[in-house]
Length: 89
Image (tube, rainbow, N blue to C red):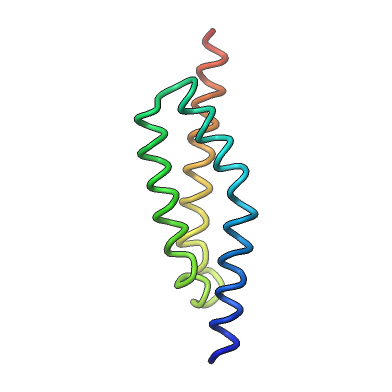
């Protein structure tokens, strides 16, 4: 229905805006202090999972995790490697 599509579009934009700050900070830190090549690969991967979000949101409840959990994994990896490199110093 139209309301389901509108709700999916609204949540897609909302979720993107909610997740972007953490992603952008982790991407920048990883690129600056660890590896710009890895940061680029994980950045494109994160964007790919974000692109799946509107479709995944319209699935029944656990379906949204198809998009969100791997995207969270990208952010955790990027930040984790920054922390690991900082602890090695």
